[in-house]
Image 1 (cartoon, rainbow, N blue to C red):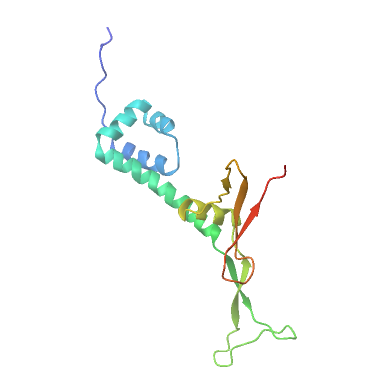
Image 2 (cartoon, rainbow, N blue to C red; image 1 turned 45 degrees about the vertical axis):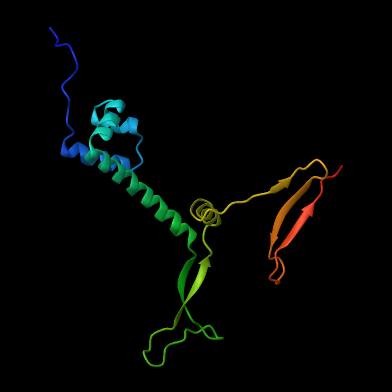
Length: 164
């Protein structure tokens, strides 16, 4: 006859704890982590809530994946430069007279990924795009910030009235 009642509480082994951190660091959903550890998702959440060590391992894995993605995003934001040899008018490579080495200079190949830069500024630097609408009954105005379009130091405000 089969034994009835709740199963005996199972403690995660060191190998399973390492797997938890690894899977979390790879962005594996909690449901699949629980499947690989052969426990229910609810049990896994209970273990994370009850044991600070398991919680720390899970958080460490999540932080590792966030750090990796943030690093890739940051690299996308940076301009790409490459070293090129300096040449004279005839196209011949110039050499340093003292060392005899070819003279190199850095040249910007790409200014970086604009979408990644905008995403970074909106999420990390709190930038936003806002349209201020004053919808008072007397007169409806849309105000937008033109910024420094001219070389002057003053900010210009533009107003547009809706067509009637």
